[in-house]
Image 1 (tube, one colour):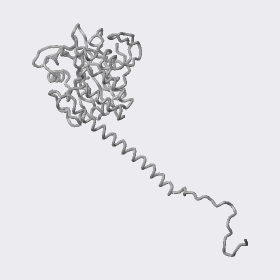
Image 2 (image 1 turned 45 degrees about the vertical axis):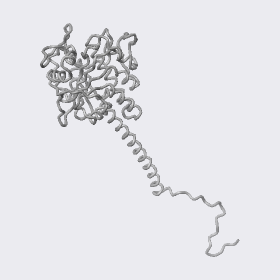
Image 3 (image 1 turned 90 degrees about the horizontal axis):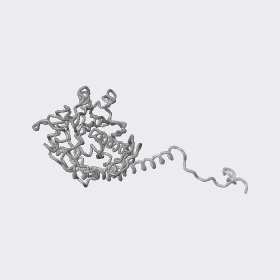
Image 4 (image 1 turned 90 degrees about the vertical axis):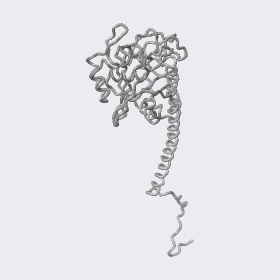
Length: 339
């Protein structure tokens, strides 16, 4: 057909496919899709976090409270908690000779004012100290003699560190906490046997029962027991922090349930404070925590603090400077491979 004036002849090739513009309009639509996806994830995480918060609040309310006279935490300061443990058999079921009311676990857990770092200071239960109203006795016997308030008062008098809260760990539930963590790793310098369990030289992966056997081994001296207790706590904090177990809804529920079942706390410890502590402990791994064993001289069944070091140590707790103290006194650092 001949061309008609004013008319454009059709292209003999196939009609081109209409494509979406690649300019600003397409980019805006792409951004909207991405934004909606991000918002959906945030909403989902918020719902999960809200459920975890409600669960933790419920679990915190179920923790046993015991009346203890503690020092209120000053605004903007660090928090110091006195940790003790009841004396029961290594499996948590056979009390036997351990059911004495004494405690071999005496630790100060300190969290700096910035809530990003802290440390643990182990205090020897063999210290022979003046106990208000009771005279001289070993620290390990103060709890059974006068209860937690007297122990708090004694430790405050000994260290000059204000004790803001008190936590007692029930060893009958320690195995459940370790199992909730999926086990923990510790290292030993040589092979040993604890309650029939062989612990090899080098790295050991401990489950609940073997972890408690590790710290309760009969052949240990009191000082060795203190070192193992602190090393086990370090392994637990490191596991929580490195694997972010408290940010995973599945592991958080299992872990919080186990932890709350193993604790008794002072009546001033509110649910909100416990929730905050659980979160903070999840961030206190090996890189942000300092583990110190208060240096002592042991003479028979008793021990005395190293007078040249204990003053700076307690000041370091009060001043949020345990890391600096550790640099200045490396011999006081709890060894990562205790005997």
